[in-house]
Image (cartoon, rainbow, N blue to C red; front, side, top):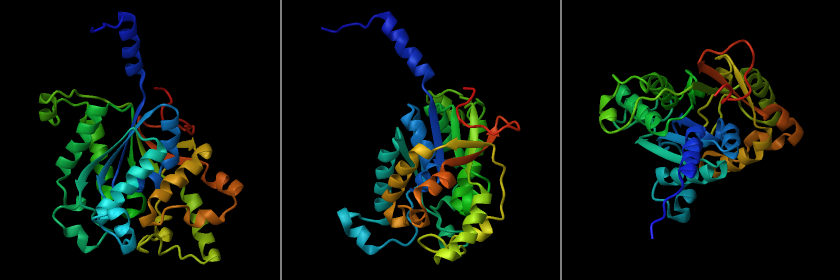
Length: 304
């Protein structure tokens, strides 16, 4: 026999739904969520926030050990990296992962930039519309993406930056992407937009430290195509510091899922834990909207 729930219970459920905090992270590749703001995503997920990841590509491009591809029957680099992301998402506690299924463009200047299915070649209006659709559907109070430099200048990161910036302001405008409204979505205005970034002062310190432990700061990453010395010169304002000291181990475990990209700690494994906590215990952001005041913010959901 069908039983009806009391109206008081229904009212409670609606209140819970209306009070549910939601965060949408928009990045380019499997591993961006862990290597970047992984501690922040883990913290908010643990605190009951629904954390969603919109991933533009499946990380098709890049060198991967052939043995890793054959393990567990991975058919391609994209298949391997998709599974690595799903592993990390489970550890971080993400509520959902969605792919836009563009092709990884490789680093700036790579021949892969010219592939017609690459994110670099994507129609910018279409890409912004896809992010707008996710915002209207998921209704996050907080949206985060890359800073204007894309962290370290990766063209896919920069494409995600501009698409998310455009989508953030398009989502509440009924004149933008009206087909989405005809399909049943409603205009929606998120409360806050953040760029995930990192403290360049820490980076400059790291650049100085690396040669002392036998690492070249101009050739970082699996493909040795990231120049930290160059990146350290690009500065962005830090408005927000999120304490993730309790979630550093979670972040490292999630990063380790991305074994094909060298995840698992890197240089940080050689640094004593108390010092690691001090250096990495806060993840940093630039609050883009609303414009931040002079005081450092400590919570992405402050004021919501």
